[in-house]
Image (cartoon, rainbow, N blue to C red; front, side):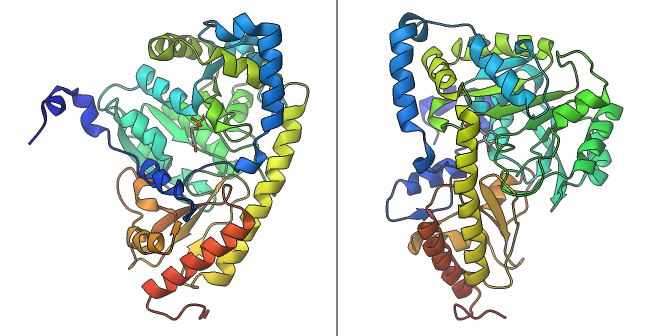
Amino acid sequence: MLTPWEHRFAQRTQRMTSSAIRELLKLTERPDIISFGGGMPAPEVFPIEEFAAACQKVLRDQGPQSLQYGPTDGYLPLRELIARHTGRYGIEVTPENILITSGSQQALDLLGKILINPGDRILVESPTYLGALQAWSAYGAEYVTVRMDKNGMITEEMEAALRSGPKFIYVLPNFQNPTGVTLAQERRMQLIELADQYGVPIVEDDPYGQLRYEGEHLTSVVVMDGQFRDNCSVCYRGNVIYLSTFSKILAPGLRLAWVIAPPEVIRKMVQAKQGADLHTSSFNQLVAYEVARGGFLDRHIKVIRSVYRERRDTMLAAMDGFFPPEVDWTHPEGGLFLWGTLPESMRSADVLKAAIEQKVAFVPGESFYPTGGGHNTMRLNFSNATPEKIMEGISRLGRVLYEKMGEPAGVRK
Ligand SMILES: Cc1ncc(COP(=O)(O)O)c(C=O)c1O
């Protein structure tokens, strides 16, 4: 029986479901559970003192401005700082190319609002970021998928999906959420060429690109696209909409992120954002600017890299020691996640139930597959728990896996 309220909800809400991740995050609030579930930064790296000093300074020097309504496209000095910061990663843009959003999640939603008509297809990697699927399904999106291997989306298999006429391509080239895999440089070029050939734009979602723990930085798709088009002007006018965020390099509670796109896309997103929240919090933007300026952001990113590198290495070593040899996992060069694959006969959702009894959690991979599959996969976050908790949690998970496989724990073949 539907309640009267359920009769009133708009049709688009029928495809809105609770995210498995959000449900799982509830568990992480229980202090006895070691959770590799969410995508949360390490609380130990939050620059709390710097924020306290910045809040005081902003209130003292710019009190009324920080508490007043502000422009929809964002606080200009922050947009200029982003232009300088991304310039060092090769992304040459002007503030005209930049929109500040309330998290990248809002940017994904605004893109849905301005680009997706009901029934439009989006070309996505399989698996892909669940939050994007949630945002776009509400606008009636359908998905065409391209498989991934250890070098990211298999661009050699993209043409079939492109022939179905997708509205845009959604790609996470660096340390992808959920798999931790990075799109190889030559595949980035192939992606740009195919997108150009079929006249399909690319949405590049890059929350983790600056969190690399080994290997060389790979050129962003937006930069390669600018070079491909011989875009000599500083104002970017190419085929890529690029998203990044302060969530993983400062603090996710700020809800501060940015979009880089051709000016006409930014202008349309600004109109869409006005209807959503008028603008992102003035106070948060001014405080973030105060914290980030003067080189602090770069120094802080180095600290985060060294903390997360240790946690990644701890998790990889613990999995080597405690996981059954039948389990495979990725070796991410950066980011927050790694991806495990169990034997075909196993369901990671069943493993999770048993794991929770042993007070350890992860996210079953199934929900990251927009068109089904991945029943035997799992996403593990390594940024949030301390190395000691990672060792303990992985050893518990190893015991659960051996039990599920009917083998005595610790018997490595
Ligand atoms: C790929 C991807 N895109 C977007 C987001 C949303 O980030 P934000 O906190 O900026 O909304 C996340 C968060 O984990 C993510 O992994």
